[in-house]
Length: 321
Image 1 (tube, rainbow, N blue to C red):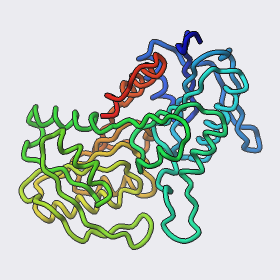
Image 2: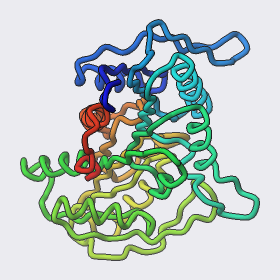
Image 3: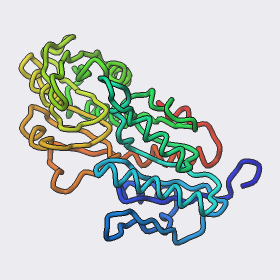
């Protein structure tokens, strides 16, 4: 490193999303760094670096998705290995930040695991975090290091713009927030499509269970586009889609940044009134969960641009939107 500028950079990947990591490296004209991330017979994670990182700007691409604990530990151990190998700067590229939904105390004696995860990353030795669409924006404040919080919304918006332009989707659309907490996200998305918004008023009697109470806004005779940050069990999004159809929406599409897809998610999506669900590839979708209703869009170009800007010490503010 000379005058704050690094001579070169290297990209490494854990086991969570190797296809995305390969795509990012290819865009940046690199091959992934030589490393092995495996397990000992007792389940402990083993990390070996097979090339020097001394004085390098290194990027570790790893989503902390299912299995969340294994993927998080892989990331922490890789960071520690880089630090002990004298890397000049360690950047964690976390397309999907796990434990983000545990960002506050919902009831007495609850942990704030999103903050704990931030502390673990910092103590391990990471210098910067690059991530996409945190469940709660305030998680950035849990870190005492730079966090580049990128917006995947434009990728999803561009998909629908093209479909509307080609006539595949009717231009009489309304963007629908599946709950009150996602209104700001929906409004930004609707601005990109020059569309009005509606809001699903729901209650959640217990975790991963939602009940639709009311629809705020005009959806009658319109094509509805549901937007959320993640699809987990798909209960909320499919209940909302079915309610929109019953209340007069002509067609319903859905989109989200993170394809968690746990439990009966695929079955619910398949049996719902959703025409197409568009998801970013921050989390890999296993072969058995790939159905015709699901379309994925790669965020590799966005992450590659952010990593390039960080390496060259340039502003990445325009990438936030």
